[in-house]
Amino acid sequence: MADQLDDYVSAIANAMGLPLEDAWRPAVRANLEVALRLARLVDDFPLPDELVSAAVYST
Image (cartoon, helix red, strand yellow):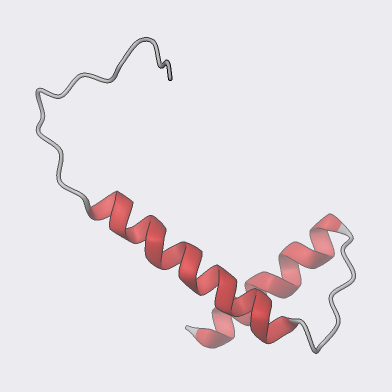
């Protein structure tokens, strides 16, 4: 999976035209790994089928 993440980081940096120094790559990959892990937690959180999303959000 690490090779896929490295390839993904390179492809996205290329697509966005962002310079990505070799020294930054481990930190960028680590950040992406954390973001993916957090996204997986949200995605895997069970919600009941009858749950309805709020039409209006306020603070």
